[in-house]
Length: 247
Image 1 (cartoon, helix red, strand yellow):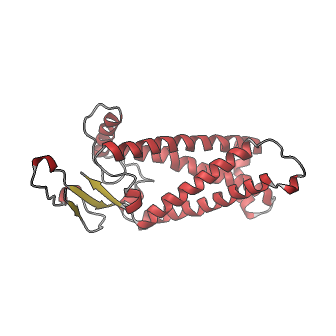
Image 2 (cartoon, rainbow, N blue to C red):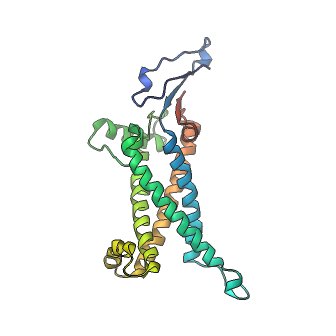
């Protein structure tokens, strides 16, 4: 098998690359490499993953605390450390999300796929249907997309981007309560208290948002491993190296 690579330019397409096949018929499986995810995107992905893990674990125990420990609470400070981990990871995620929005404008065209659904494109809609057939085992060969496939774009947008925005805003509203009335963050996020009619409702929907993101993570992991193994194109390794490989 002969690997061929192309310089990392956003306009590179699979059709424009030269493929060099091996001499034997059985090994005519050349690989094409296309540079898709730039280093800031990959760094955001893995740092964001770490923050979500910390937020989900700490958030679960904040909503469902463990049994009371023996002795004085000051000897353990368990919930204090749990809340600190949650607040710290949440604030880091806010800055990472703002940086991700900024890089959507300054990065290559694949950096914008997370926020834009080109539903007006007939080609995109056709690709969506073909990808659905592939996921339902109705097609024998996977459609090949350089960036996110249309189904993945939809799941990322509705399963992560929108819930993440809600979790960030509602989380900041809950955090602002501890800062007190008159603080600028409280003044910016107090509309959440009016919209949801109180703090308890925000807590409930914030906790529900965690489960939405957990369901997204399960779908995301399943699709990534499935495509890496059976679609003849790289997925997980692409988010490590930045290069999409097509067999």
